Length: 127
Image (cartoon, rainbow, N blue to C red):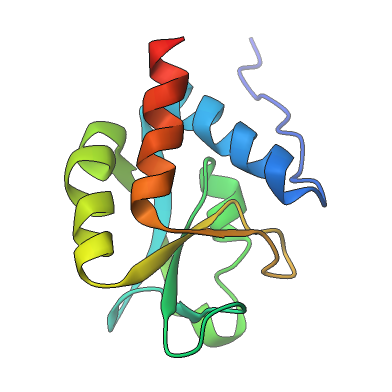
């Protein structure tokens, strides 16, 4: 029996990738970040000077695709969704970090205020 599931690659539409992030994170019960020798992966924001973005993905394979170049020493690490929503996002808000959502291989995608992402999850969960 073959349990391998073909995962559609991320598209070029950041809004679609955000929707996919929320749906897949809720289905899997976790999100994926990159952790390396110096802690969690961070990237400079494209839109805001002096603000870092911590990227997360809805699938391990999406995160693993970024373990190259500057992040070659990093590994995908799952973060429990409940912990992500209750602890990580409020903490990132306090630390003035943005959250990167399902960035594609060119590191393109949404950069969101963590509490805005939390609201998106809460809206989806209440449907």
